[in-house]
Image (cartoon, rainbow, N blue to C red):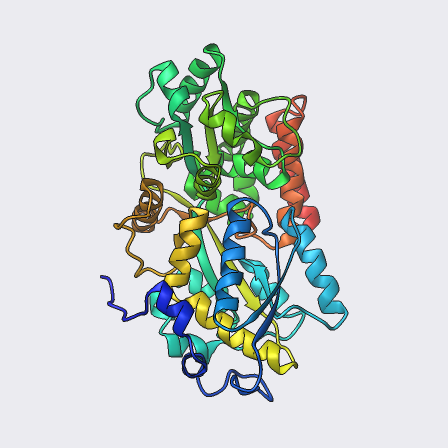
Length: 438
């Protein structure tokens, strides 16, 4: 049941956010000793994230402009690449005693990193905004790991989403997306026979690892939960994980062999032209396609293959953690930033750009500007919750701490690119890598 929320429009938010509204949203204090009065300094925010290009870069830039239009100074320092690179930069700044006011962080890393440096207690701000009632309990738990809100989720993605080029589908006479891996493989073979590269892929580490997690979830979400999220030794060496490696080998064989270490987004144009048939990617693929100047008529999208016929959802949620600051302008910037991130209008703006769905459950995706893919993602999440088939993404640092994630992704990336590595051997290497990383 949707809870009505009286809120300003985006224009009103950007034009009329006064110092009084900032203070009201933040509560009387924010668990920050010596908190500066928001009307005595110009809010400033230093930010670290991975986002610099494509729809992610466009969205974080729009968020920065919104912050500036509400009176703040936005200082974003992107660190492109795998999450590890961004975390190395964050660690260096924390160790030097100068952490950013806010940084991108997600999943178990929120709890782990909060032990390294002091974080801002956001309880008063969250309570004043009534934010928690609009956040799924599973997500709330990740962002308040020790009972207090220390990070704010901004957007959600379904990782296991399949996109298909309309021109490629027309060329092989296909009218609907494959529902199972057997149907996917049959369609891919048809595309290959027609001179189409069946699957677009870049070759960046998370991209390679994500193919395996989509395969495993499509075979058995229950096995995914036990193997990836619980690291159950028996399941890791079980038949479902082996089947996921075997399906991933098929996926690797469908990919363009000349692509290596590039973002998949370089293939958007040939995908739309029908030279590449399908994309297995999170919802941000929609943002890349639309930002490339193409339209919703150019592609089809929906859930990736699911062999058990029930809705399943690999969740990826982006969030910001706030680090305690002594400078009054940074403290004021954190107040303003927290208020903006929790606003429904901000989350809608962000999701319109990236192709995600808002974290807030009161978002209405029935109106203009939302795609069928986003509506499918939102409905898929609700259905997967009912089926107990919601799991957390490995490749996007939701399922495990970074050191375990990195060890697993190393094995998965090698498997995708080394055809001499057999599925059974790769399965054993994955289990061994997890044991070494624990």
